[in-house]
Image (cartoon, rainbow, N blue to C red; front, side, top):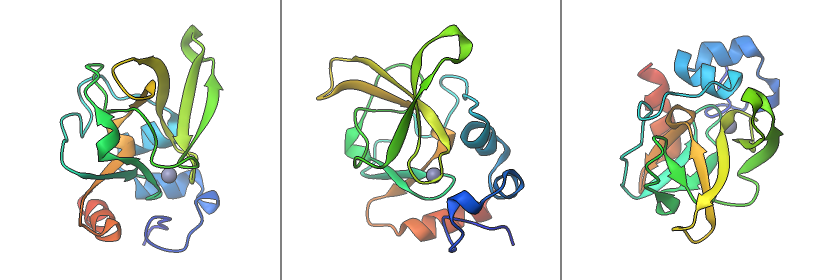
Length: 155
Ligand SMILES: [Zn+2]
């Protein structure tokens, strides 16, 4: 049985690379633990519009409220704010010859995506551009632990 910080008492910081690899799907592992980016338009939740919350697919930490999701047209799920201040951490990212603000999960430090100040149509003006495979959607009224358990079992 793989260690699972979302479902047992394993602390995210105690997870080694091999533990994450055993737990996550290949695409989740590539994004969350190796900072890969899914191709635009190919990730999950692009057109998800139900009420609910988006959790980290790695550790289960709640990251976004569905009410803060908007259609940016960029090809990745977009949010104009995180669910609470410590939900995510940000870093300056100089990769690929650009200077960008990288976002990672505030709990497991898994890579989520980047923040861009290009969303004047939203209340904050900023776009959290998130890889869909870094997220797990929990519809309103459903138990996050149950949804996570089903998700792990299905992959
Ligand atoms: Zn996490």
